[in-house]
Image (cartoon, rainbow, N blue to C red):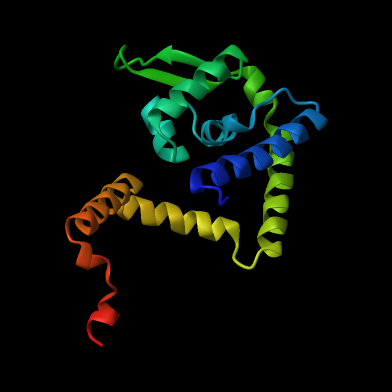
Length: 171
């Protein structure tokens, strides 16, 4: 049985994240791979809103909010009210979070080298394929594609002759 796209993607993420998680443990770090996009943004920019972190990290605001809750529990970040708008939250790396950056950078460098090695083993680099898939889905979202497939299926059932290939009709 052929695995669906979602099943394959989840399996790929499990394989990648499991190895990265193990590498953090081997480096003596109590750190989750899901923290990395947020951690990198906060390392480069001091004091950002959740929305700005999401924008710079390229992930959704709900994902950032969930990740920050875990990071706060692990004492990697501080979250305070903005001086200009008390409704706005400002996120910064904590002293503990900043103290990990050197060791994390080493892990990130090793992970990048491993990803480059994986890309070199494939006929088409995974990183390029993922980038192109994301761009294609930003132009034409997957939900739209599902609805289009549903409409094509409904059209085929409504018009049984539509199932005939156009090439066969011209012969």
